[in-house]
Length: 97
Image (cartoon, rainbow, N blue to C red; front, side, top):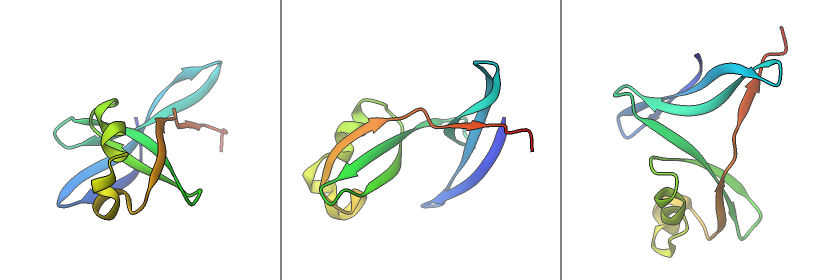
């Protein structure tokens, strides 16, 4: 596991990590977020009416996407009108540097 970044949110520390493995003969890592209590969080990608894209961490892969699209959360969570949310498998590939 490779630690890429530490994320602090409301006094809850999470770490963005690459879980390493061998995919198609290349050393790569799938990006996930984990907290100190061994909780894993999915990276949700949301697009907005104004064509912006933002990333969010969600605990439940299905309910989390539904929650991010709620109209009542525009001002408190997403910061705008979400058109769609989905999961993308973000990866890190070791270029041998």
